[in-house]
Image 1 (cartoon, each protein chain N blue to C red):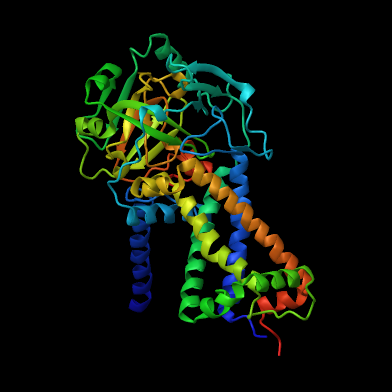
Image 2 (cartoon, each protein chain N blue to C red):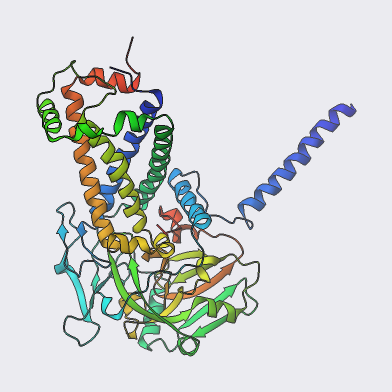
Length: 257
Length: 244
């Protein structure tokens, strides 16, 4: 009788413990890009881990001379307010962008929130008044082409510090007006060349290149340097951004290669 | 006439599978932007060294809203690309890099065992007197008229055979790894000498392409020689070893 009751209870407690661990692992303690059992995503994760383990963390991407600046095509979304380009227009944010554009981004704000002490929204003027950095770097597209441009903007680090990033923060997620979402780890987010650029080749960032503000992540491929930013969220855990992120669309989250 | 050693056979087929996967995925990646350049920057708005007719992704007439950045003559411009292109890079790139890791692991294992066992020195590296012009010419003649059955399946290898194997394994494949790494922005940030060594990101990409072309050429000649000297016999020898 006793024997019979003890076994199920032990099984029950074991099961409870393991499912609690499962929930924790799947949810708020996830620190790495999920692979969903896909062998290609496992390879991407291996490359990411190898780069973080083997490559010196604080090296800078090559900066070029003014005379090296090259022509550069604008691909992907070239205007978030243009509904004609299939797959690059968001019903939710496209019309908002059109209104912002009509007032030359005077009402545009960059929301910074999440795992920060002082969530806030920055106007373009506020960002321009912050310390700026100008760099001439190579944009390397996954397609195989490259272009050298001069970028001017505020280091992401300065914006994060102004918002008071919690010490538990591990990732920075970003969202755009063409309704894409992506993210980088803190190592890339705090890198001195990771800037929120509002200037390109000495003038305001053109619409086709992400006006009014785009990210530059110089140690990764071009698609990580998101255009048309609207929101930044600091997180303590990894977020693959579901159907709006890279992984569930079949692309590597890490693009240092 | 001797057997292919067991570890040589295992490494051969792993490397063969990895090479075919890299060749196919690499070709798909090249199709997305089938133009090759020299230097650091190169794109649809700059002149190409070579434009390959393997996809319809380069359509300069369809680039719109051309904007010049400065008033200086020859100043950089930008233009919008609003047409859809062929692009399977989501899986092709990830497959390429996963397979590259595997080939590097197989290659490192092969070279390590090859050095320790003396295989590379005794069977692959040409001896001094083999490199005499007369010996070279004779070996070339032998290759043009190979006799099935008369030629062995394993070492000792002929001179041209040795030169082909060593240049693929010790020169071209390491060059492919190095130029491949030069295309990785995180790697060149840490090791910028790679950009200077190869003359820029696009030059490294162009060298990577010619490396691919020479490896395909090697594969074709290799297969022709295997067929000419007895396909079934050679296949059996490289898979099961020679039967007693």
